[in-house]
Image: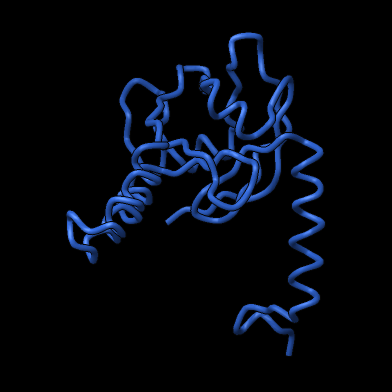
Length: 156
């Protein structure tokens, strides 16, 4: 699976359109063949932050499959399904790589005229620029305070 790396600042137009950064479009294209040159993804508000999550369709499908462990009519299934599916918006870019962010997503993330696309590995997030900067600093501080490392990443 391709990883989304880096942060990219892009401008929103008056219609709520924004260009997906070229490296992110390339990563999306590698996961979903679309003959018209557009890229597909699932957008949804983050559970944890005031940002928008962008999921490649294959990865979103894997997330959705995890609901299978719950009984179809259970409260757990109902709550998770409403959250995952009820707030998910499948979207295709135009040929120039632009997507339209709906009003609910714009409002959730506090987006007005610019946004930051932040790679987080298998998905990416779309942030208001000042909030993205705060989140990056917070994540770094939290990781350092907890002594978080990845196995095998320490220099020898």
